[in-house]
Picture 1 (cartoon, protein in one colour):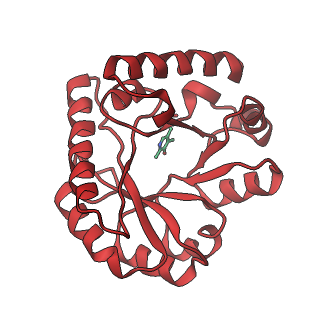
Picture 2 (cartoon, protein in one colour):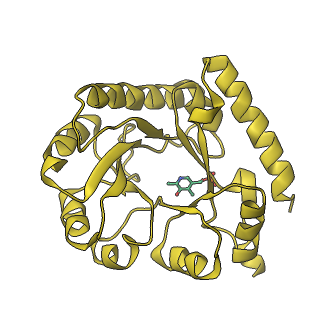
Length: 229
Ligand SMILES: *Cc1c(COP(=O)(O)O)cnc(C)c1O
């Protein structure tokens, strides 16, 4: 397996090129290393390379990493979160990327000890296999969150459709950006909505060109080494 450092160097070059193409500041793009498929050791390698935003998608994997890792990192929970798991997860993480229903918001309100930075997950492409609200539902849902004292909607999150058609992927990111801009313009205290969590190993360059401020990269950065543990 190639080492994290060389993967990181090429990813950072690509991020930089995408920023240049889109006339964006590279400082506005944060790389989240998705470590869900890899060991604690591999995750430590990421941290040694000064990537301090880590993404996990299962409560068990998250807790295992948090217990083993002492570095001061930001934890992003990127998977769909079962309501009954909120209690054990919510006060361990810095960002939740998968807020997609009222029952989840209610449980966060009950269990979070401080205000939690959340992304509302949007299923722009309306693929059946994907979680998230439609673009229309997301806007109403965010309005309704104004009465929740423990939820701050920092932005929107989506996953691109499974397709080789880059123009379709680009359109999904564009639609999300358009909704984000619209919600941010409302200047609601509970929903600054300035961030866009979009782009994975196969499509992060397009996502950055379309405005992503957080990209979630797993395999291209760390590979998959869980089998070797
Ligand atoms: C696994 C995962 C990623 C990372 O995917 P890669 O293709 O390995 O980069 C990003 N976002 C979410 C929500 C994921 O579940």
